[in-house]
Picture 1 (cartoon, each protein chain N blue to C red):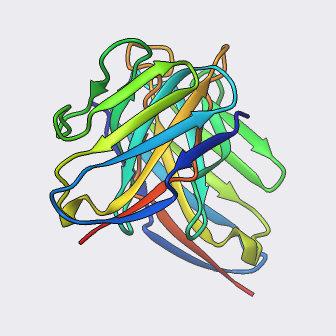
Picture 2 (cartoon, helix red, strand yellow):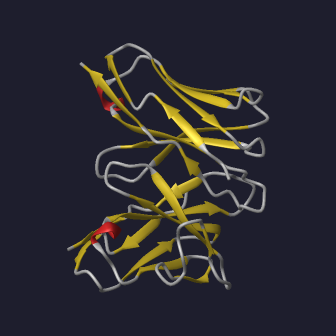
Length: 115
Length: 115
C-alpha cells in the first residue's frame, strides 16, 4: 500500500519568513495530493491540493509543487503569520482507482510562527 | 463543501463497553470514510463506509471491533466495541462529494476517552 513520509516534524520560523514542508510517497498510482491544516482541538481543514497532471498550484500565500518522477511534493507558505501556526498534514491517494480516494497521511509537521 | 456533523462530540466510557458514533452530511456524497487520530499522532484510515454493503477495512482493523453502517448516502455510524484504554482517540468521518472533485472534508470529530 501507499506510504507517505513527511519532514520536518517541527518547524519554527519568524513572522514574515517562508516555510517549506516536504513529503514523499511510494505508490506511483497516487494521483491526488492534498494538504490539511489542523489547529488545536479542531478538525483537519483542506488548504490546498494538487493533481498529478499539474506541477505547481498557488493560492495566495500558499503553494504546492509536485515532482512525479521523484515522488515528492512540497507545501510552501510565504510571508508567514502567527495564525499559520498549526499542524500540517500531507496526504496521497489514488482518487480514481478502486481505493475510492482513501487518503494516506504523512506524520504531520508542527509549524510555529513567532511574532 | 458539505456540512458534516458528528455525534457525540466527546464521551468518556468504561472499558468493556461500546460506543456508536454518528456522522451526518447535509448532501448526498459518494464516499464516506472513518479515520482515527490517536493523541498527538497523524490520521489513520479505519475503513471505507460503502452504501448498502459491508465496509472495507484497512489492515489492522476488523469488523468485530469497529462495525460500520451506511444505510444511505448521507449517514454513517462507527461503533467502537469492547473498548479498552488504547481506543482513546479522536474518531473522524470524512466525505468525498459527488461529481468529479477529489476533495475530502472532515467532520468535527468525536473525542473518546476510555477509563
